[in-house]
Amino acid sequence: MPEAQGPAQLPRDVLGRPPKELKRLAREGCWAGSHAGRARLYPRLIQRVSCRLVTPDALVYRDVAARLFGKPSVSSHPLPEFLEGCPVPTYCLSPHGVTALKKILICVGALFPDITHSPLLPALAALLLHYSEDEAQCFESLSRLIASNAPHAAYIDQSFLAHQASCMTFGDLASKHCPAAHRLIAGAADNVLEVYSEWLSWLFPGLPFGYAVRVLDVFLLEGQKVLYRIALALLKQFRLSAAPAGPQGSDVKAELQAFVRNIAEHVTVDKLLERAFGIRLFSRKEIWLLHMANRKALVERGITVVQRRFYTCCEGYEPTVLLIKTTEGEVCGAFLSSDWAERKKSGATSGFFGTGECFVFTVRPEAERYEWVLIKKPELAKAVPRSRQRSPSPAPESPPGSSRASRSSSPNHLAVPSPQGRGRLSPFLAIRHFLLPSKTASMFMSGSRDGIVIGGGGGQALSLDASLLRGHTEHCETFDNPPLCQENFQVQLLEVWGFQRA
Image (cartoon, rainbow, N blue to C red; front, side, top):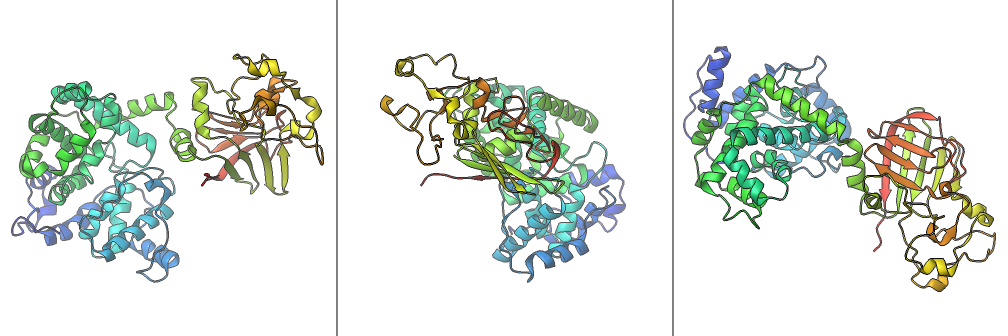
């Protein structure tokens, strides 16, 4: 680690000081002069954080780590899913320390299954690991911050919804407390919220190590409000020191990141903290209320788990296999022929798309497959006349939302093939090539902010709500299937397997 600034100056009775004086000492860098001093103080400060009664501690970590990894230095496990897309800084850790960091994060994922998105967590773990006796103590400290139940004093956002609400809250604060910088960014960026969505990354891992630990000094005492303060101070300093050359054509996001990385060239850490705590910010409760209001607005706009986790992870793969295990132990799913990105072509409506390759199935208690109804009953469809195929407008019988074109580019191939072998209809043809008895025979897959639907017409073969936690199944005309499991079910596990062509 970089050398500390000077000799340790920790008063013997520092933890006995009144809260206001303790905050003043942290802001002034009372324990910034010694890494050893921080190592003595950090665990004791975190022990004072109010948290849930049942919170995993060092003993729990040792037990779980022994079961997961066997030998302490061996770990071939992947990082938890909630860290997908989140930076994992190592902050000068040795190779052994990086392995320890990975083990801690894996155990956090195992013991805190409710965490679905947390960009701040890996940076905090890496920093705290420097000032902990071992992995177990670092894990215990991190667990207490995760499980904090102090009123209006959250430490770590633990879901995409909470993180997005924090970004909106920072945007509101920037507009009020940094109007000049806010106007500058609004003039240079197409989407101001997209710039503010990275405000946490300005601090962790954006700031150099010496600045990051000074932020951590006060963060452990004051919670997330400190992070808003430091980010606002950085925004103000950015406008003064490294403003873009002009409002047009500037990559503000990249310039902000470069500015933060080189912050030492513009302002000292003491001056940065002084300016941060000089901002007349809202009270902790008022910021919490603003955060809750933004969170509610996001929910009303449909920013939920299904938008972030399901669509983002599945787009770009074609086809995909959806697997669901219910809390009753039943297993069912669907083979889906089209990329979920196709849903965007329907605009605001939740139109159906996909092809006759789609089918639904059950695995447990019995294995059954239910294909497109026209494959088993080809007599229900007839070829679209060639004159209609050339028409620029779709046939009136063609249902809306069937967007995928045939793999054949020649009009001569756009006809229903004569039944061969068992008389099966080729599922590779798109629906627009047939005159169907009803629109409901082509409702393959649909996705919106309210959830996802597989199969339609008279019912839905599979539907999941926006939380991906509750579902419904019933007979539908597209697949002519019975309910795939208990009609109203709760999801225990959900997997999507994607395929890409070489």
